[in-house]
Image (cartoon, rainbow, N blue to C red; front, side):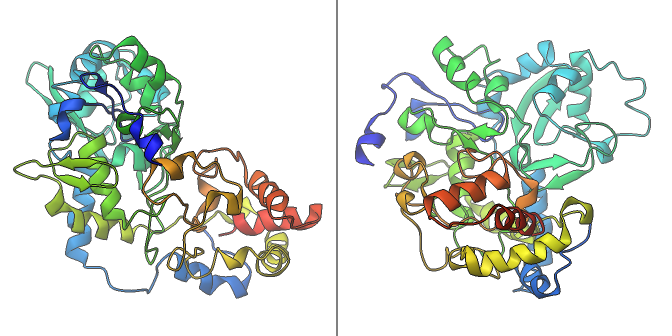
Length: 410
């Protein structure tokens, strides 16, 4: 771990960040229907957090506003350093924006506004930003239609839309990972970046982001994770550093470029900003995130009879339950796991602070392929095959199929 963290970008070189769509920082910043099996219904309800604990509705409402609309003052970075307002104004028309995974909130649009809009004109993108209709993007537009500044919010990476109007246009789905988003390709449009940085950014691809690249110089992106189904899950990140507020602070300050304070001696990070526009907002942000339930799978999306058989495989023959323990379908409350235990690539664990991985909760797992932190399993069948091989489970083909159907029902 120490050797990896020692491989930092040379002093004076730009350190590029990104929280899911865009991000860079300089060296100087461092001062519809449930599961049919009745025996599984209670587990799923508990896993989604229904009826568990107490959430303050006022804090949830405040956190929703922060999640969707608060940039933490990161315009200083996206506008002042990356000059992304210039890029959007001159080169990012709506069709381009949609092609790289940006989403449009249809409920923010006046009736009929899209019917006559020129989707090949960057001015239309600016107009959508002025309406607060581009998910995760906040901008200031003057009366002449000039985009004066732009920043990003948590929703950029951790929200999508239901495509109810068109692909990429619809009602918000907060907490759903935007696996269409191509952060690197968008950030690489910045005129402030050197060629070698753009090459790294363009290598990431849709739905992937490297939250440590600007810290250690390694290029090992991970998939954008869901921000739903976290209630009663004590450690919410892949590597179990701490509660979700720890990661919110890390990302807001070191990745989004927000004006806040963050300290972690384990990573050699000590950033102080006065005033701190991040830390006071973390409790409400966490409250909103914990209110986001995992989505229920459509009834037609899995075979109910096979799922019922697969539940038995999950609890008995495959013993998945040893780690994916109800009601949260994780054992993170009692342990983390060495990468070798589950045959995982160790790189992310070594770059982070624990050297281990948490067991991922399974509620809503049907919704967010690819799987594992690095996206190395394209489908749930690939996940099952991986564990059957690594753990020598000896499952039959039918057991594997049934287990997949059970996972799809969660």
